[in-house]
Image 1 (cartoon, rainbow, N blue to C red):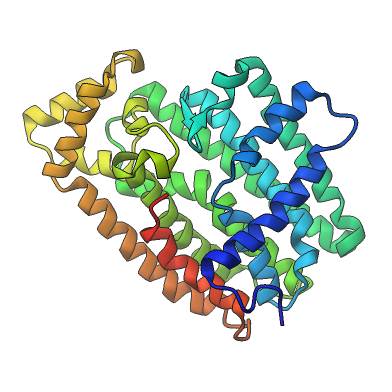
Image 2: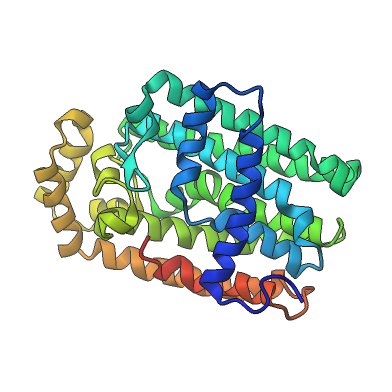
Length: 345
């Protein structure tokens, strides 16, 4: 019986997250880190996130027959790297809020924030090195390769999105959006946790290919729901500034749909908004664009799309987890599918 076998979904999520958070905190408490690095680096971790990524990794370890302790260093590395991505993403987008509080660059200044992001990524490498002792060098090297590939996909996806914004792209399609989030979101949110968890749990014997398909559908459902929550979620639950994606001009599925569905005059308004400088995108006009999304059914379209993706994830799960016997951990991963599209934060 695993430690989470008698827990419900929320409690199981919290238990997995606590294991990863505790380990990540230990890596950041090293004596050779100054307070100028440690304090901002620990900030986002201390605020508490959803914990989906480390939980998915650890649950997959258990589902494929492994000891959850074998995955803790990898889960901590993923949480540290995820936090590094958040810090840099907030600087790049000049975001104001993260998890209900000021972003790192607004609280500590841009220089210390960027350096804290760098530091989190460096400390994540230390956590991965600890896999050598627990997993053996051969399996540890395979885990390292998974992280290496994931990191390159993620930063390339972020570069593509930033490039779309810089170039003022107006012709982005739903397929372009899905290609983008496969790189920017899915690889580190779902695909890597699944692949690394199965690698560790099976001691390298699992077929990892079906996990990519499942991970894509699961991660896409997560990202579309996240984009919707940025527009309609309660700020006190969502934890970021409302309509932040609209202010930044991000090419979300809703915006892509609006550009395709709007009448000529409304489309011109949206295009003028996207062509303007972020400093000119006032909250009043952002609210007008949100109203257009409601009127043209763009938010309903994205919500329907996400639920369709989730249905595909449920089918892909059965294939990807066919080798895993019934267990609390396997059930937890299955329960993540509806959670991704029905969550309110």
